[in-house]
Image 1 (cartoon, helix red, strand yellow):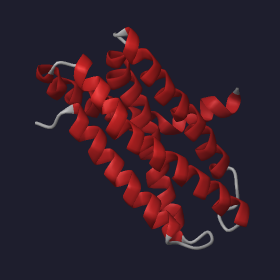
Image 2 (cartoon, one colour):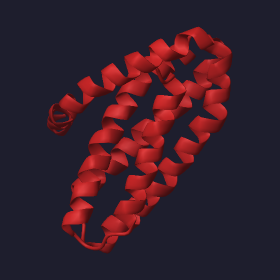
Image 3 (cartoon, one colour):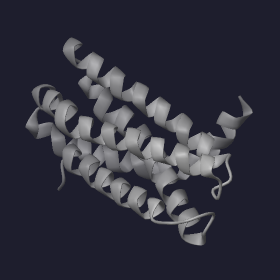
Image 4 (cartoon, one colour):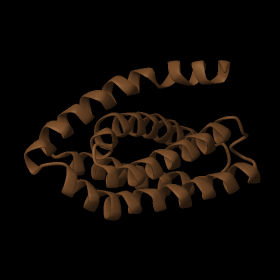
Amino acid sequence: MPSIYDDIKADHDNHRDLLARIADTTGASKDRQTAWREFFRDVKSHAAAEEETFYSKLMSKTWGQDAARHSVSEHADLDQLMEDLNGMDMSSSGWLNKFNKLRHDYEHHMDEEEDEVFTRARKVIPEAETKSLGTRFRARKEKELKLVAKKREDHLED
C-alpha cells in the first residue's frame, strides 16, 4: 500500500507529464483541450485532498505551520491561474504566456513540496501513519474529482 508521499509524488509525476503534453500542443487543438481538462480536474482534486489530509497533519506542529501555509497559499495562486486560463482562448498568445507561468510556478511548487515539505513532514508524521494517510488522500481525491465542476460553478457565482 502506497504512503501519502508516494501518492502525492505519483500525482506530481502525472501533472508534470500533462504539463509537457499541453506544452507540446498548439492552438485550441483537441489534444490541448483534452490534456488541459484532465490536468485541471486532477490538480483541483489533488490540491483539495492534499490540504485536507497532508497539510492539516503538518500544521499540527508549530514549525510545520509556515510550510503548510506557504504551500496552501501557492495552491490558491495556482488555482487562480488555472481559472484565468479556463476563461481564455486557448489559441491566443495570452493563453500560452499564462500557461507558461502556470507551468513554471507549479513545477517549482511540486519540487518544493517533494524536497522541503516532505522533509519537514517526515519529522511530524509517524511512518506508521503514512499509509493510512495515503488511503485517506486517495479517497478524498476521488470525492473531489466528482466535485470539481460543482465547486467551479459555486466559485463563479461569488
